[in-house]
Length: 101
Image 1: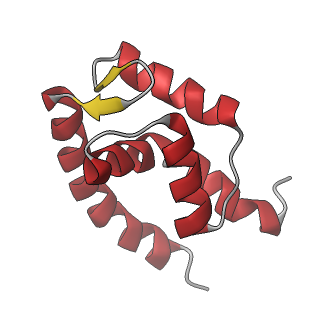
Image 2: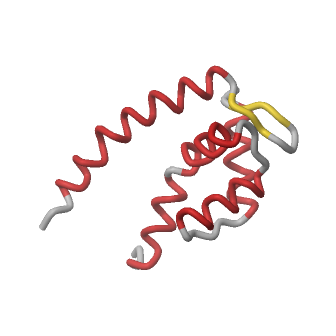
Image 3: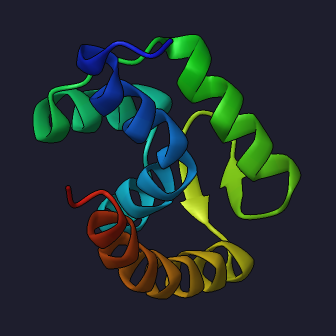
């Protein structure tokens, strides 16, 4: 069973690919450490380096980002980010309405 205090962590982890792409887009290029730091400072969630590197590897393998230590968005990554933001904006209110008691 998921404990209540783990919910913010689980939400951030679920959105990690989009958070990483957004961080890279805002910075122009970013390291894994930059992404970890951004999440900790902006969202108050501490993720392990392994979690972030795994996500970065997946994004790179799928062609959404390029780099070795500093990563930047590809056109494919920018398209994914833009399309995903639209879907997220449409879906979150539905989830929030569903959770109303």
